Amino acid sequence: MNQPSPAAIRKAPKVLLHDHLDGGLRPESIVDLARDSGYAGLPTTDPGNLRTWFAEASASGSLERYLETFSHTVGVMQSREALVRVAAECAEDLADDGVVYAEVRYAPELHTTAGLTLDEVVQAVIEGFEQGSAGRPIKVRSLLTAMRTQARSREIAELAVRYRDVGVVGFDIAGAEAGYPPTRHLDAFEYLQRENAHFTIHAGEAFGLPSIWQAIQWCGADRLGHGVRIIDDIQVSPDGEPKLGRLAAYVRDKRIPLEMCPTSNIQTGAAKSIAEHPIGLLRRLHFRVTVNTDNRLMSDTTPSQEFVKLVETFGYGWDDLQWFAVNAMKSAFIPFDERLALINGQIKPGFAKLKWAGEAQ
Ligand SMILES: [Zn+2]
Image (cartoon, rainbow, N blue to C red; front, side, top):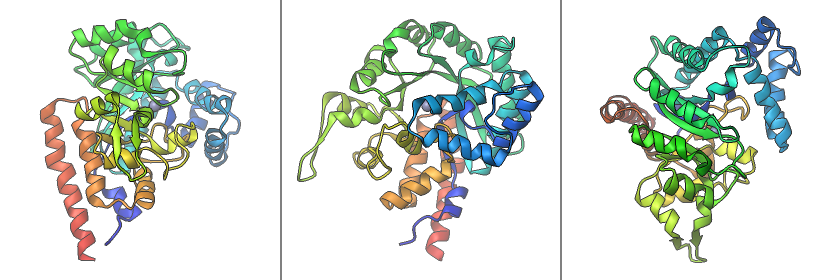
């Protein structure tokens, strides 16, 4: 049987739900933006070396070095022009990689150090996504993230609701998980629920089941950012029979989407290798698994690259890849009719063409 080739995977219509705007800049743009804004902190101004530096710092296993990478990307994303450019290039890069729908997230509060207001930040990013996707077969929407270590989540949730009809489709909390449980931001989540708004929560990446349980049962999260530790509530007997605990069963029964980011999870230590990543078992058990990039620059990856790794490791075929893409589209925060139009108009026909081409070889 033909395995999907990297070139064919690139053409496949993909859906991305978990990607950070400040984790996906082009190295050339970081150098340009640093020069234009007088940002002097970059470790090198050679784009090639800078790309390598980001990948090495992120793979080093040192949290300090990993966090330093974001200080540079966020450092050069402090003006309206910079935000428009980074967002436009993000849309272009994802479209080039065959992504047809993406929800890209960022924390507005991190982009106000040079004087932009939260509203100006959100408007600039929306403008960039519109610019970059014009004339390309991609839709890009924003998720607004609040930092879980800070106390601005209610304000950011209100911002997300204010821009819900013009490009912002949801809310998220991110940042250090241990010591900052989701319930710390209950006020924001309860507000969003009363507003009939959507949100996802980074949970079950660095911290275990209690974080996932809180995100779902206390906060009412629609989706889980990562959620890899749900594996701790599944026992597999020596004869291969899986037994789900109550929380894992709830997540599967309710079809709660898991925004899994295999390469990133390995870098942060949430999984040892792709082969040992819980995605293999969770896919077999039919959890609502989706495949994502998290931070394309830091993890030196693309949506296609994540699929390529899964195909190489688990032997997935086109049906598996389509299943991941349809899962993600079903789990998106845009209206149901728009999701259906993308599934029936772009995703299924796109995969059918690739499957047919594979069989004809
Ligand atoms: Zn993330």
